[in-house]
Length: 291
Ligand SMILES: NC(=O)c1ccc[n+]([C@@H]2O[C@H](COP(=O)([O-])OP(=O)(O)OC[C@H]3O[C@@H](n4cnc5c(N)ncnc54)[C@H](OP(=O)(O)O)[C@@H]3O)[C@@H](O)[C@H]2O)c1
Image 1 (cartoon, protein in one colour):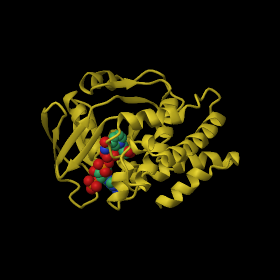
Image 2: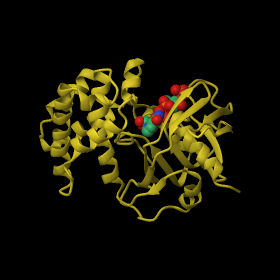
Image 3: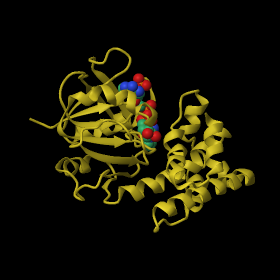
Image 4: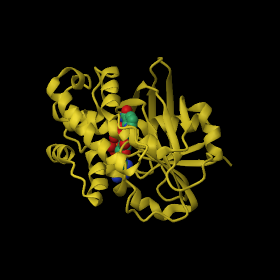
């Protein structure tokens, strides 16, 4: 029998991942839907940048055992979505956390024997009803989130040919920090000032604000990792220029009045800085402003 994946949060990224898992031949179902019809099957129609289209129909399963769980809710929804699902986890279950932002599993009563795989993606997608519009299929990295084996699990090898630019990373922590540090500059500034990413390069005041955020992030991350490259501003401006016309996810959420992932991006930095008594006034101010 084929290995079964449960998807918790079949939104933009969860659906993109689910489609890849399905192409790899895994059995897929969704779980934990919050709008009542949790057992109903879920339809997703994906439209890719090259015009390719793909239809997926995943049954709901709200009671069955779970061996492999893909978590793709927004970070701030993780606890609410995951806690009811935990009793269904089988021994040595695998959890793949596909989220930007860090710390969404902190403090949750996860079984000690589960294997947590961290995943971050540079892909872009947005949803209109059941349709997932994939803007770009960019690299996605997965790697162990604990002090675990350096080799990928067997299912990863089966999945890789079906998920464009999927890579295993032995140092996921570094990879996550590189992405988080850039997000901590671009996302809140573009949300607060309601501007596209490129404004950070073009507007001197925004650029100066970006420099303060980047500098504070570098000071913290260098304390946590002596090999930290201290180049957050360079990477953030490079990405802002390369995606000049794009709207960051935080800007989109903030504009729409939805909760943002700020507490798991800049808020995560503040939580790391607190025990070090390291002041991060620019991050504290922007978190407060976006709240
Ligand atoms: N979108 C992108 O292009 C992109 C790119 C890179 C990384 N990411 C990251 O990927 C993660 C997911 O983002 P996304 O854009 O895919 O978000 P999303 O489209 O909002 O999807 C989140 C899904 O989680 C579901 N959900 C929320 N609360 C739940 C609960 N309590 N129980 C069960 N399901 C629940 C939502 O259900 P409803 O449908 O009912 O709201 C939705 O289907 C984020 O960390 C984001 O930063 C996104």
